[in-house]
Image (cartoon, rainbow over all chains, first blue to last red; front, side, top):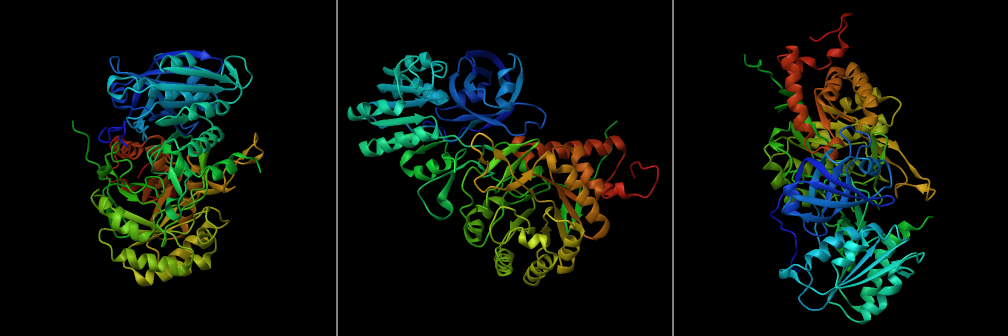
Length: 281
Length: 315
């Protein structure tokens, strides 16, 4: 498959100004940064690695999928949920604050083949890269008919659903508590979509959701690509900290989310090992 | 008036380094990962990710987690094995134009010997760094670095089969680091790297389970720096071998602590993940420090804090 990613495009690490900060739901923040190089180079599925402080505590950078770019203004957006010390610093940051940002990093989504419609399945904060992808799939050169499914726990967690639905030709919103849209898990609503057929499916969300999406796609024989998360160190493939297990032996057993991913063909991922890792005990 | 010329070069185990700032094994891959971001030719040298005789898959994830001013890792020596290292990694490494120090680890003395033999036949390797201190593997690894008789045995066995300079990388997870340093010296090491990571762990209280799949991992980052400086100080006092000091270095000031404690060179590790150009910044700031303080040669600062002069002050 052809990739969106321009392999010759470089990556950058530079001071980058936060130019827009909007709390879009309780605990969710939309951040826009001024960086023409990343705005020009970033492709759907790629991520940026943000240093949240100029001190060494907290130590590591935080990775965020790019949610969209504004090439005219030379800016890009990320969607963030406050989960810990690093994201709390970003949540409190005022417009005008500078952060050192590396990016764009990783392999983005491969372009779908010319045949068939495209299904996008988002879980919670995993909607961010799929908004970018849906937008790209409505550009004249890449145009595809896009059916979006977006599931989250509550209405608040169905964050940026308007942006996502606006970039899809069909949209289905689902919450676990039924506070908005249909009630249930996003994967409960996937079988009829797969029965309608599709050329390709892309998903991003919690690991257990991705495992279920991958299984359903395999049964339906529909190509499935997933964007996965993992605790990350360097972001450039050097530290080997952010691996996931894949179906292979020897040194190929683990691949790096930052460099070999974050997008993987769902068929190569060892979902059983991932399920075991997600289950306490 | 132009700033006075400063000589940053140091001699270490027969190597001439343009400056004393290396990047530490496991934190800089095989050199090429950072090529887009870092002017690698400025580095004093690169210690490559540990290579073993056979390929290793490494440990299951999660392999890393953040801790106060530090991080834990339990990578488990994932690497493609020495054959692939020589055929696929060395060609790009030797193009970088800086000394390449190849870090090796084995499960047995025989593994270390075989690795040293294979790598001795490979052109453009400046030195071997013996990893006697990996806390994250079941066999070998740290075992060799926490018992002085094993340290001496493995260094001596490798010494017999290679003319390459040998650097023993020691574990901090011992009660008497000086004894291990002496054992490495007695085995024939040309230099010592101090320190590898500290054995540690974190617990995920939401899952009520260890955070790392390997349960324990190695602590690195600024959190360990005072421990590392202390160990360099102690070993420098007792063992007449050059030392590469490492452990949480993020600035020229940190590097100077190690040098003044007795390190001939330093290696930057975890900080590379956070600020890929950190080594270059440290080199520039070391030069500025020497200019501002009138130190003509950075080597004059090695062990300077051991001076018996009551007044202290720079040499």
